[in-house]
Amino acid sequence: MRIGLFVTCLTDTLFPETGKAVVAVLERLGHQVEFPADQACCGQMHFNTGYRREAVPMARTFVRAFSGYEAVVTPSASCASMVREYYPALAAEVGDEGLARAVGEVAPRVFELSALVADVLGLTDVGAYFPHRVTYHPTCHGLRMLLIGDAPLRLLRAVRGLDLAALPDAESCCGFGGTFAVKNPDVSAAMCADKVAAIRQSRAEVVCATDNSCLMHIGGALSRSRSGVATLHLAEILASTEASTEAGVR
Image (cartoon, rainbow, N blue to C red; front, side, top):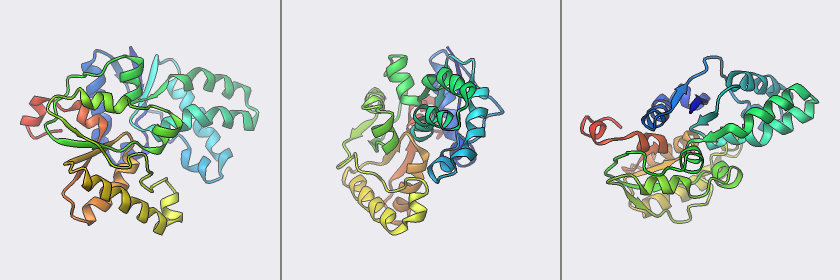
């Protein structure tokens, strides 16, 4: 399958290893992964803060960049939700029939990584090896918008050496919510404190998720509390092998 990688702003600028991990996993499974160089922000921040018309050019850029691929994969349930759920509404709002048609063709082929692998490709064992106790935080967009369900958990259960720990009150939000954390810092911090307490209760060495934005928020709190718990994107766990572990690379 010819797959386009939508890496997202946050991953591109702060967590590039996640993008590399997505490519490693899919190429290991025999797929051709390409990175369209003219991709840009999906416009979610603009859309969510009321600058909806300013998000329209970003939607146009996205559908141009990713047209023609059999599938588009992203290591972000949040950004996948923007494309799949809100691009159709955005095109309708501005009355752009051409954009609406393009969105209708591209958006249904946009998948968060775990949904693509577990549900579309029908795989769970991707050849990963990760000998650590791991807990999984289901992010809000993946849980409530994309409805990816237990796809990440199915993939994690198939990782050799991995000890999967249940996360208490797993479906509670971590408190990040993009600009929510900026506009409501006290509430956001309190929600994150609850999430960190649950993670520590799980006795996990690593907490993983499908969104680096949530992991960034959680990771900051874990670090400040000197918990000793690491954060790692699901893609990086799936990309890990015995050879990379022995070399000290995840």
